[in-house]
Length: 288
Picture 1 (cartoon, rainbow, N blue to C red):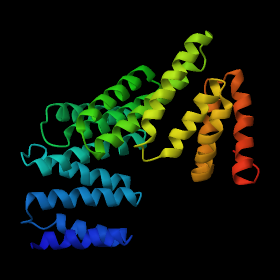
Picture 2: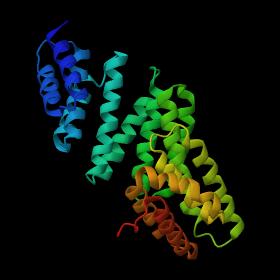
Picture 3: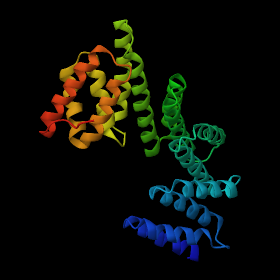
Picture 4: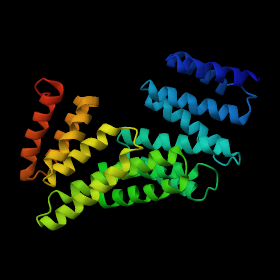
């Protein structure tokens, strides 16, 4: 095994033990070896960026991802190309988190164009993930219709992946699209249109639940949609489970959702939410 390979192996072992600083040292050393094989150096740079991100060092993480993309953007090696794509995707998320929305959107465009023309294995799942990230960014910018189109595209691309990653990204896309439809349906005065929109949201949320990596978020959305449809009895079970598993976060999210585009039913939902919290947690709801 090469020196870089040994350092990578040691770094991943430290990472599994929770020693992020020690892992980072190994990955940085591996990336600096002059004669490291391109695949090893690309892995080291991406792992370095991931560790820096996990340690809250966003600027340094972006530098590592940028170095990886700059040095290997045109690589024909599928493994290296996948790492470049991952680094670009991670950079989009970091830039968005720093409030650099325009840079994040520009980089997202570059990544999607790159993935659309790629025939490498895993590209469909990666494209679905990139579309989900772009949709989330557009939603934060208030560009709801564009965000909905991104989530719908993500769900379609994920269905072509045929693997676990595709199922996960498809679930994330359906949950996000369901949430957008839910929030758009809320303020509609015509009850038939409102019910149709909430029903469509509920179907998407149901499809998302089995494969989503954050079931409480999906269950919270389901409970809210059911309540707005006048089905409070059915809403109790998913809301109770979500509050049991991840109480304070779900509670805060539901309060925030009920405060956006507020309608008369939201006051009743907030009382329902507080009562369910008391039943599940046996305490008074968090003071937000």
